[in-house]
Picture 1 (cartoon, rainbow, N blue to C red):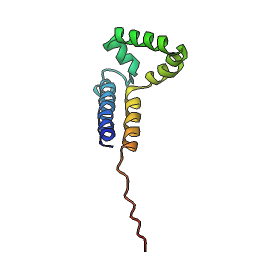
Picture 2: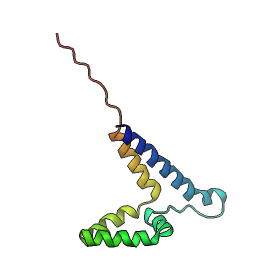
Picture 3: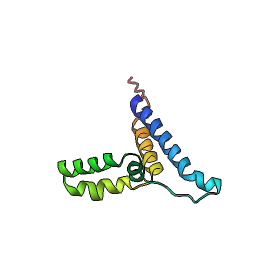
Picture 4: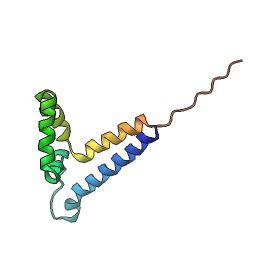
Length: 104
């Protein structure tokens, strides 16, 4: 449970940083708001890793796993994707309420 709460906070931090990075040009007046996707960041930072991952996924699974499924997930804006992951991890990592059952 604690690990899911930790992951939720890390994913939320990444989502906020990505949102601020996307909104900074619009707030400065130097450009417009443009939400970058995960695959765009990945292609900018490590293009060889992206190509190798794509080739590995296509080689080990079916090609349909990469193109419609993973590509659609990775094409989502980074802040939305990591915000959703933060919500899911936060929901499953929440503290459960203790039920007190009294038997007479």
